[in-house]
Length: 85
Image (cartoon, rainbow, N blue to C red; front, side, top):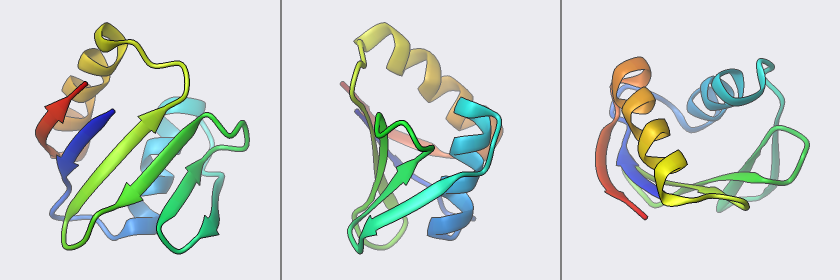
């Protein structure tokens, strides 16, 4: 899980960018108001936490992979990382 702030992005635009980074497409699904599915594989989820705070979950995550992705989120999206676990 990565908890972060994304100050310059709207929810759907952020989810589309994440999908482009992870899968190379902009396929975003919104099965409920409190989360967006990144891609069609049901493995990645973006949870808006209010304001500009988000949680990004990956079903098969390990700490090393999420740490690497957090660096990419900082660099590519201008995200401010709060926590990686």
